Length: 398
Image (cartoon, rainbow, N blue to C red):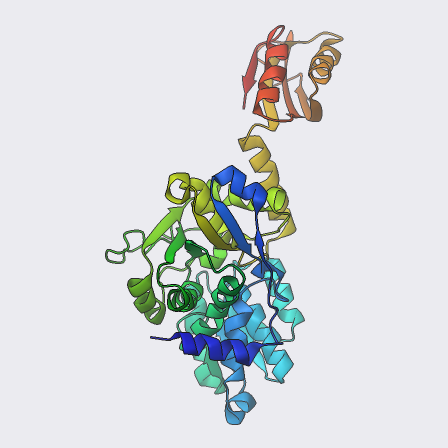
């Protein structure tokens, strides 16, 4: 098992090569979740993720002969960018194998650091197998994304920095994919503060440790917005650390992750990908578990496709009542649309979209079907708009 000394040596090795990211109190988020939340903003790293910590440490430890051979890595995106960037800085040739489902933004950014990207397989396991094949065929050094002590120690430098800036934290809540971040962070945090609690977070469908501290289970898999932690099995080396230092593993679902992404954007002005928001999602979903405690959360990645981010924010507005979507069966006569628009406007609502079907959607030729999406200030305001419409029309909220 790695030790605090391994993490401290990694910190010295990567100093100046990786950003020492801010550790900041999150007042707005704290008020909403009922805990004293501190954020570690590793989404501000050059590659948008904590992953370059481990990559930088692993590559810095390569010998001259290994550097000449080049490296190969397997990743859904963030480890890929970390390896690509630091290989480029060190003049090492890098090949990165990524699953075919990897977001385009992560593929483009990885190629932008000068690496050769190979898209192969529908899962991380299939990509990993192909990476091992290339490693053997081309004589390269394999840089594992999490099941590697040097990578684990590098990731642990995040907690080292966080506790230097916020030494009185009661608990760290850390996402678990392959386990590199939580294992390195747990070793560092527990050595610095034995009383601190370490809580892991997995996403539904990739929750092999849902029964922790009980035995691992076989997850169902499937697509998720938190693709950065969509790993079916934690690494063997990280699992040893989790067994020793992690008290609990919480599981979050898609809606909870989406809500956390939105809260980070609105409440902390931070862009987070699904995996980067998973820790906050766990706190939001389990308020009684963290009430009144000093909670440290890593925003560990910010590489989210802009289209997905836009959709998440809109879906969250709809979910919490600030977007109102209604369907109405209305008389097909002049002035009705104007009346409905007036009622919404007089109530303070802002119409975003209108769909008016006269010919085929309604069961009567004397009626039409109308769907309206309007913006409201909050759920109470949305209900007031609904009440105004229901004075004259039959309205169904959708």
